[in-house]
Length: 339
Image 1 (tube, rainbow, N blue to C red):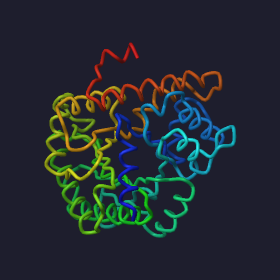
Image 2: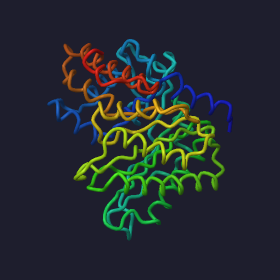
Image 3: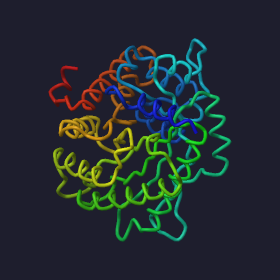
Image 4: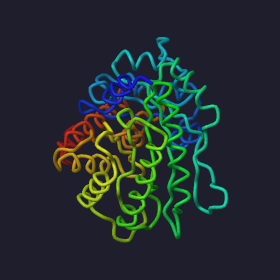
């Protein structure tokens, strides 16, 4: 393990007011996204859409890393340049999603466990050769009646730690993503309680697996009310609760925290991030690793039509710039119209 290299990559991903574009949608997920714009999810349409995002002029000013899917890391630009090389030449770190998705946790109704550890070391070596310098693994933690169980939290933390150790052995920075799902009618207090527990288990397992915290990026949920909660917390409450949770459970050695947007609107995700960064000096970079919150406007502008290619790029760079400002604590909602 080359810790110096891992630290440098982690800094490049989330330092200098930059964040991460999550462009690692599975085939099923991107089909759902394309269905909303009446576009067929063919390999070429998927390639062209990702190319539109990656080749956006100025993207490297705001994006430090891109998470790719297995199909995407093997694709090329229209000029024949492999996507990982194209991104790396811009100074954007290429990454790869390596988990095999969340599946039902046997014996625990309503709970999930993420699979994909079998053969992971060999896949890491291949992905490194393809250009990946970081990876992502997502654990899914549902909130509901009597869940999550302590066993579910421990099982997912254990899998995340095993994955992270395998990554670092391959000189690949692990993005460690314990996502407490936003779906449900739970309060912000319940979300904070579960996030506290998930992070406690996670860092205990990372320590047990001898994972170097200086060479990871944490990708947590924000502490936020459930989507169906009757009295949803406001932006400042979300920022305060999230910072309280992170300060209590995330060691200072972690170089960066890159939030998932997880069901928030693009504007909500940006505002919450900015409020946290405006709160004062923090021990870690507080950044973003957004999928829909960076892509939704761009996808809607593009709509699968070549004539809209430039419009799609303009929509993407706007959101990238606003989230970079949020990383600095300088975003204001009035910028939405002006940007």
